[in-house]
Amino acid sequence: QYAAAQPSRDSNSDSDDDPHLDPALEGEDTNLDLPHDVYGATMFSVVHDSIQLMAKEGDDEMGLLLYRSRAIFVVASLLLNYALQVSILVVSYTAVVKPAQRKLQQIYKNFHLLCFDTDGTFIQGDFESWDEKDDLCQLVISNFWFLYLILALWWMTMLNDFRKTDRILRRFYHMGTAMRWEDMVREDHKGTRQVRELVCEVRWFLYACLILPKHVVSVGLLITGTWWLVCTDNTENLVLNALALGFVVEIDELIFEAMFPETWSHELDDVKLWRRAPGSMERKKMTRREYVRSYSFWLVVIVGPYWYLASGTGLPFLGVLPGFRHDVENHCSGFHRDDALMPCSDWAAWDGAECFPFGGPPSLPPHPEVYQAT
Image 1 (cartoon, rainbow, N blue to C red):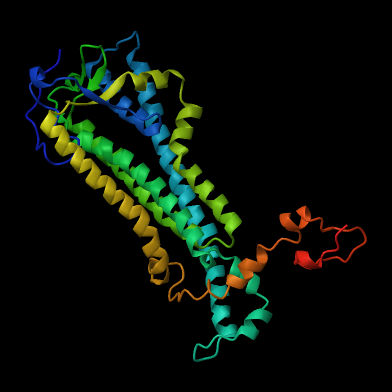
Image 2 (image 1 turned 60 degrees about the vertical axis):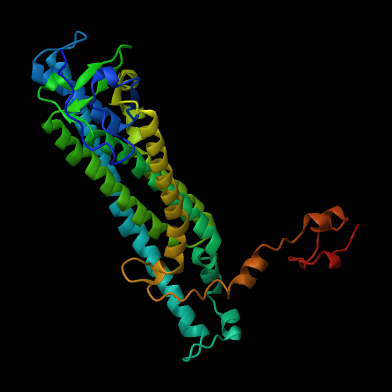
């Protein structure tokens, strides 16, 4: 038995407009799939299992003990997921980011002390003989555009994570308030179970224990990951660090796929977060709002990392190198050019140059015209 739909909220607040209209006016329903991760399992358990527990009866021949065990397992997995992500954040910041930041600042300090006059004039000779020149020029801050591209991808990764959570939050927000626990889930004419309403206890549990912590972890990952990438000591490690950060983001999916019973995937597929299908005019407004948001997201991903590297890196608290003058890349351009110069180019080998002669000198000159052709 399902109760009648509750009065609607404001339908112009965002693209997930209010679903609560007369069923005769609904048209085709639109459903949002539950994600196949710890968060999706938590949503399912909190809504579905709570109905069975509060009603003191089981369906599908499952007893109350099984429902309690499943709810405990899901909540424990959620807490373990938070513990793992927060622990990795804290350890990464204290054991990786801070030491890397200290090394970065020390090299940059020595660069200014030993390669400049007191009036800020650069001394090329001192720079060429400086024993930390290679360390300075291998820092990723000396390669602005490559670092920018990696940061943009990292920000896009975290924006994607944030948007997934935000879609679910908006769907929860626009659901009506159920008076009875069993009114939260309904079946449509196709037999699909749809979450249409939430009791207050479930709504606030999802806000406080799922949506809010997930956003906090996402913000923490974005900030810590940005600092970590900017402090990386060379470009090879920059790529590896970016991959490691992606692994941290996917911990919730890893826990679900590795630790949950296989039947959970089918359970999540059978339950949807419901929204009514909008009318034609409403759909046009919704589409316009969605594109405005998408343009805004592109602006954040393109401009945000650029601003951070151009201005934010040298700011206190936000940056990893307070007072950074962006004077590394220009002086390291020659290092990067020489570092990419091959002992034997493809054209030289094609032209018949003997690049690696037996019994030859230990190092060959990097110019094909002086090679001895066979």
